[in-house]
Amino acid sequence: MGCIEWRNKVVLVGALVALGCGGSEKKPEAPEPEVSEEVDDEEVELVPVEKIEEIKSIFERRASSVARCFPIAVESGEVDPNERVQVSVGLVIQPDGSPSKVRILGSSKRSKALETCVIESVQRWEFITLPIPLEYSYGFKLQRF
Image (spheres, rainbow, N blue to C red):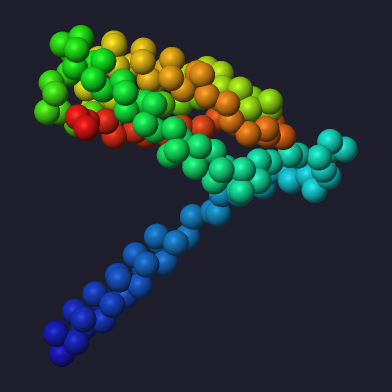
């Protein structure tokens, strides 16, 4: 019978521990933030997907003008002719289609000549008209022809 009494004590202690663990007071929950369903009188304008696809198409069609920057970087001695360079450019396309704030976001090879050429090339482009300014980025892969 000693074994049975011992098991009963273990079960009793286990039950007390289980009750003790969950017996603390529940903390009050933080109030949920208020969500206003009112919409301002001004309508929020977005750039239609078709226009974004057209902008991507412009980059693809004009990539050859940026590709001309690779030989310039090679001639400067900053890039090896056998390298492949990836360059990401960022800009804001204004509602009238003009580019602004053109900058290099990243490059697999640092080259002042290459980066300057890419920026100057994209700054000369004209884009489509938009309802609002649009931040856009695009990546170019440049290599020897």
